[in-house]
Image 1 (tube, rainbow, N blue to C red):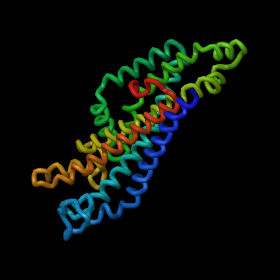
Image 2: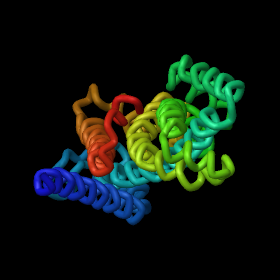
Image 3: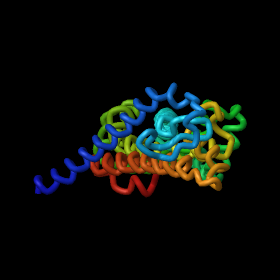
Image 4: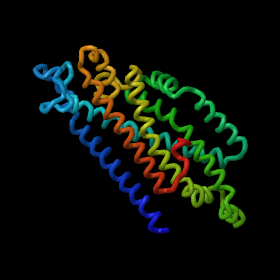
Length: 278
């Protein structure tokens, strides 16, 4: 039985390591290609993908591979920051709702339901505009629109842990609520927390690209994926398909890698149902 359990967990660990290695490589390469992504060369404009430029060039002669890598790197970094802050906020809200009593639970649950009742992209656009758009506007918008589902998962897990026997024993032995939360409840919700954190990455990246594509996110001076896709739309009719297709495929690949990492992490921790809830 032990051997049968070991093989799937080993495979999950290998998938997680592979996905993390590729995402790290894309991030580092994107940072290294920042200057090349902005370099203009009108002698090489509108080149189709080929040996000289794998992803071709745009109407200003800029290397589309360098721009795609730089945009993906920026999206990954924004996704890491926003997902981490959003997950921490979800941990605080979900734990507080379950531990602070009936009134606090009712109030925080009502806030969660209120936020979940507003479409993600609409709330994200409103928050981004209210914060001046740009990097900070997108960051604040993503943080405050992606914590609700994970907060509900953590709240449910904490409520379940509160009924467990060892926590009941700790209460009878005189342990304080803070000590119980630190020693027993927090370790119990860490698998759900980290799995939910990883699964927040693809949502954050896609929503950052979407709101930038619509013109409410990052500015056009930054080689973000949303900017690249938005600018390429007016050139598709002229046959320059590579300007949108190749960066779009790469964006989908990055999202799928984060999805693979989340599923692999859930398999390692035997977290069932995390994908559906987050």
